[in-house]
Amino acid sequence: MILMIVYPLWFIVIASFSDPADVANGNVWFWPEEWNLDGYIELLKQEMIWRSYFNTIIYTVVGTLIALAVNIPAGYALSRRDLFGRKWISFFYIVPMFVGGGLVPTYLVIKNFGLLDTFWVMVLPFAVSCFNIIIARTFFRTSLPETLWEAAQIDGCGTIRFFFTMVLPLSKAVLAVIGLWTAVDIWNSWFNAMIYLSNENLQPLQLVLRRILIANESLLGVASGSLASELRSLSEMMKYAAIVVSTLPIMCLYPFLQKYFNQGVMIGSIKE
Image 1 (tube, one colour):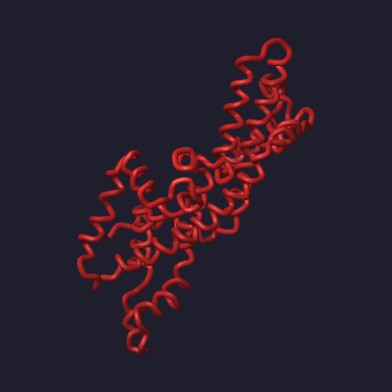
Image 2: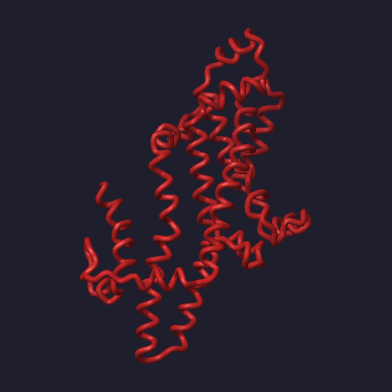
């Protein structure tokens, strides 16, 4: 099972360093026939790569922090049995999980708030996740005993202090899971940037990589002969290199959160 999961990832890595002809002919299995860095060199020559990489890192860090700041307190509030109108508020969060407003109304809302073509359009409008709020609510309700809150009240602890001093330190699992899910979602996001960002200096890595690969395909359509063969080979190497460049940071982040992820990933399967 480990081999089935790891090998495709490893194949992408070695294919990014291999001649596309060797990959197409099945000569590359566990190690490149001949090391070739042309795909990475050509990809990193693109002017917007480094800027977009920085943009994506900032979007991911800031967006994840904002998402945790709004989703975790909302999930905790919904887990409190003394919250007035708790069932109706929960219903209010559950409905958008199945019914969305649509692209055009969302675009008009973002435009009216003045967020179009700004940094904040990538981190604010979609920070609230109803799914993550329900996950957090389930975790708090099943993992934190009511007696803990009662003991805190006896010692004179208020709701806000209880949340920050006791709930959050005991909730590393759900924080790690929701944080990782959010970070991966923001890191891989390109559609929102394509719709709401026209300023190239604000565009994230995924959108820039998409534009580069599409431009290469366009060049292939007008080239012929040996030039077409060379461009096709370079395009294939750039595709593999783009996959490695765009996924490596998130893959490096996962091992540090794995122990919390393993503990918290089953939260949503617990029924009330």
